[in-house]
Amino acid sequence: MTGESTGQQRRAVVVGAGIAGLTAAIALRQRGWQVEVLERAETVGPAGSGLSLWPNGLRGLDALGIGMAVRDRATAATEAGMRDPSGRWLARTDIAGVRDRYGDLVMIHRTELFDILCGALGEGRLRLASAVHEVEITERGIRIRHSRGTSDADLLLGADGINSTVRSLHWPDALPPAYAGYTAWRSIVTPPAPVHSGGETVGRGERFGIGPLGDGRVYYYGSASLPAGASSANGELAELRRRFGDWHEPIPALLDATDPATLLRHDIYELPPLDTYVRGPIALLGDAAHAMTPNLGQGANLAVEDAITAAALLDRYRDIPSALTEYDRVRRTRVEPLQRLSRRMGAALQMSWAPAALLRDAIMRLTPVGPALRGLAPVVTWEPPD
Ligand SMILES: Cc1cc2nc3c(=O)[nH]c(=O)nc-3n(C[C@H](O)[C@H](O)[C@H](O)COP(=O)(O)OP(=O)(O)OC[C@H]3O[C@@H](n4cnc5c(N)ncnc54)[C@H](O)[C@@H]3O)c2cc1C
Image (cartoon, rainbow, N blue to C red; front, side):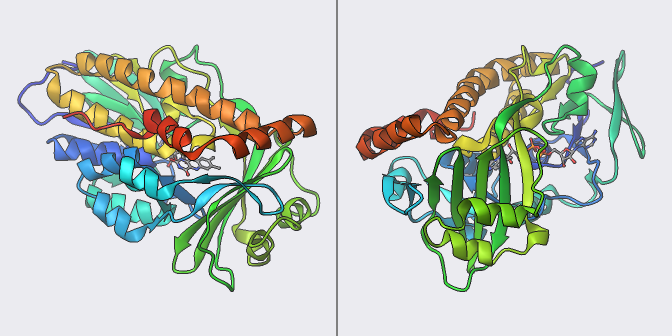
């Protein structure tokens, strides 16, 4: 019976309670599905970092009815752009222009976003400490085996992140995630003096980004071109001070305010494009389908888009495989160019060779604001399907 709409409540299992999984579960519930979310971890929500939500992602959250709650707990971007390590602006983002032309752009603490998503999902839908290890398609549907037992479903959404188990089980030929060539540190701090100005500072093979979160808190990240798997002999905070300690304010102040225990470090990987995001009644969403480098700040926004699109198409089409075939077409067309764009941006922004970095900075200084603003259109003008 896999895939046929029967008039009975249709059953979906969502693997992974990240942004993709939670938004998909909310969207399906709102459309009358019986939903179970299986999450490997014992708690939900990654700690200690912020997230940029763009007009496209916020439109998706609006479609779920939680966009205003997110805006209320987020901070509207005020000032952003690119600087050099001395603090000189290379390019300014016309934030008012982005807002007028495309919609809101905000920064939010991930924990706050997860609070809102879990509240919208409601009680009793999320099973923690339930790591999925087997997914079998049978005559009668899908059988999912996990560390807490067995679940059955008509639809399975694999939203289990870049190292997806669902993908490894049903996409055996998929290439593994590839190292992008740089590592990233992230933290949230409360510096003694308020920071209102965000943006990114580019050096040679190094970058530092700042995103004020409101209530005096500031999210920051640093990145450096390094081999995969490296760690810093004197500790990660010492390494950040060595690299960025003499860059413009407030970077040294942010580092001074950092508790080393809360500093995250992750090597940046991306997933080589898949031939398809769909196998019969199984679909991949978010990073499981298309993990990309974070240079566009779009990974979570696209995860929200995936979820909204999948739920809408599953409503529109009679049977699940047809809906998912359309999901695959629509989403790969949307995501693949952005994955490539993000990779190219990373290569340019992480340049180590001085002449190339100087040329890059000159191009940024000379690029007028108008075309830069118009260039955002393909990224942020996405609209939810009906
Ligand atoms: C440095 C950095 C900065 C970023 N900044 C931004 C930004 O500003 N804006 C933006 O939009 N995006 C940003 N991103 C990207 C964004 O974080 C991701 O695209 C997004 O979080 C992906 O969400 P997801 O739900 O697909 O996957 P995940 O968040 O990885 O969630 C997957 C979930 O599945 C669970 N899971 C895994 N395996 C199993 C299993 N076998 N069984 C059950 N559960 C399982 C995991 O525990 C996890 O909870 C950034 C990424 C990085 C690395």
